[in-house]
Length: 90
Image (cartoon, rainbow, N blue to C red; front, side, top):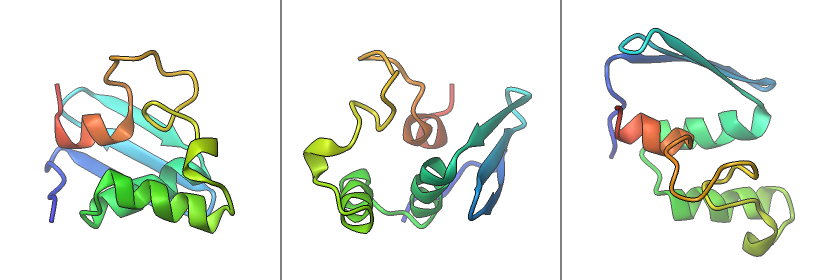
């Protein structure tokens, strides 16, 4: 099970989430889908499992979900996705 770094704190509800990264003095606001992913990352779920659950829960196929990092505007090779920052802080 993955453990979130101590410098990350979050508040999550059904509308979304706010993540405070005290090491970078930064705050990230997530929509409901981002909060869905964040909660599952905190539980230690692998990203492939999260994607499968998201597809199931939204009646989508895996191919219909945005990518490459679950975010449609993310450029390939960037580290802007939540999973990357949560598990590999810069």
